[in-house]
Image 1 (cartoon, rainbow, N blue to C red):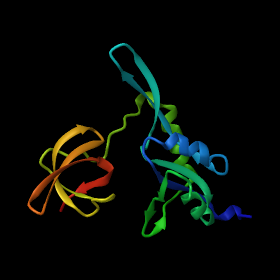
Image 2 (image 1 turned 120 degrees about the horizontal axis):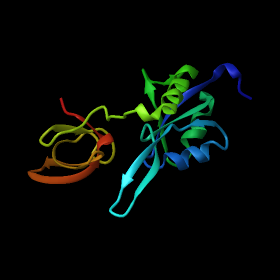
Image 3 (image 1 turned 30 degrees about the vertical axis):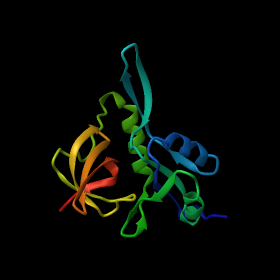
Length: 169
């Protein structure tokens, strides 16, 4: 049994484009919050409104940290977001503020915090190429880039997710 005093909102990093499925699975056992925003996609024959996560690759869970390892065992859950090696905690006020913004979604505009440019030097921060440095050679879309990696005298071009990159120093 958990004490009410040790239950907080935590931020989970989850598999991108699987947020809804993971949230649904976790909501059977935990209080889960997945803020969604409406997005209009246009195809040649129609326009469709779809709900997409406000924060791609993240969702919020209200639980005791004692449940951490059970939550991490769930398929698609990568990690708890951490600050100073401790899971980040959100206050109820912050969750309410996100809800408040979503209720006024007509004025809500989401922008990615950082975009990469052609020719920019980057470092890969996760996956099989962890720690490898390279250069952006092509931009496929907002979330995927082609990165040139020069190793052993060869140039390898890899298509990679933006969330796996950081600016090289």
